[in-house]
Image 1: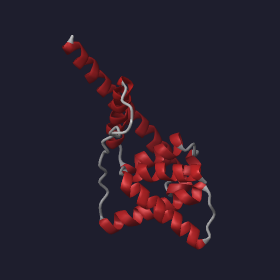
Image 2 (image 1 turned 180 degrees about the vertical axis):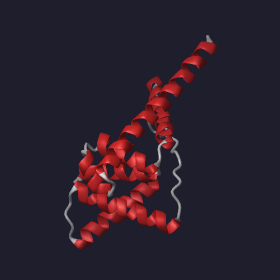
Image 3 (image 1 turned 90 degrees about the vertical axis):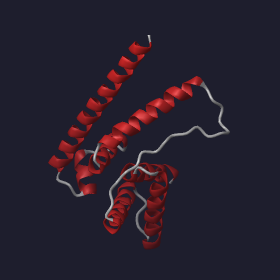
Amino acid sequence: MRELLRRGYRYAFSLTHDKMHAEDLLQDAWVSILKTGGVLRRAYLFSAIRSRFLDNCRRAQLVVFESLDEKIEAGQRYTPADDVVLANVQMLERALNVLRPVEREVLLLSDLEGYTAQEVSELTGHPRGTVLSLIHRSRLRLKRYLGILGEEVQNAERAVE
């Protein structure tokens, strides 16, 4: 059950791109499933999360996603490797912010959660061809964006030398 909640949180986070909203979304979906006696399966949970997310967006008429700043908590031990991890996390967040919400959603479902294109199609309500196209375009956009960032980092390192 813990793993199901973790996956549900990751999915909610991919939709909202905000920790607090993701937690609220997951909680609302989980409570709803428990109240109705629904099946505690990943697809059912993801469907409930997605429905609530779309309802909230329609209600607020807002689909703006803000990047989160990763910070090392005060009680943790600091190492130089933390800088590298933090820089990579921030670079990945910026790269994911380049994608539209629907692109982030299908990319998470296919690459992180391991759903097939047909399963993603059924979960999201998009045709299978559209899902395949979104996945392909999302990966290309991420590669281009991360390639550009990599070139900028190399140029900055050369300028320092």
